Image 1 (cartoon, rainbow, N blue to C red):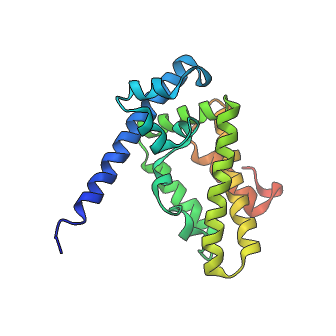
Image 2 (cartoon, one colour):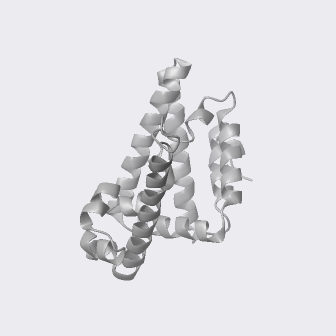
Image 3 (cartoon, rainbow, N blue to C red):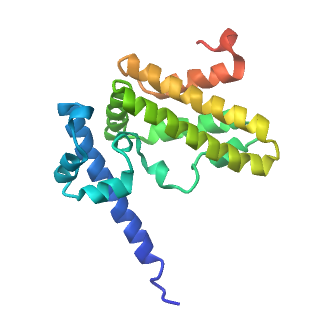
Length: 200
């Protein structure tokens, strides 16, 4: 066996991610400057020094240029194992807290830019909700096969994903007031306790 046989796919994956980030950055600049509906895929491709065919192959739709992040490159969501934890909300709270704490300002700015486009452009918001639903369904199927309880798993996973969407929408519509995690944490407290204990 060639000892370098694993290197090429890894290099190819890194090159693909770099290209996708470059294309997304060009798309966000153009959408912010001219409006989502006014920018064609061909313009994004030209700005990113890529072909339209490459943009379609990597992203599929124009809306995904905004919605996409690296987690979409995983065969299953990186969050899937945490839903099978004995305390899934606690486990998910910890992983989100650590994830947001590790983000630099550039990472947070990218999230803010993407969310601003999502929640000011109905076509992107609709695609985002559908994309989130499809992720929820995939996570629920994976977790249910391990737990053997599809009904409860589907309800919980969809509730969690819906709560995170609501939290990020609230953060966006608040003018990105403060860091994002407190908004998400409030959503998780509501899932745990309901309205009676859901507010600070």
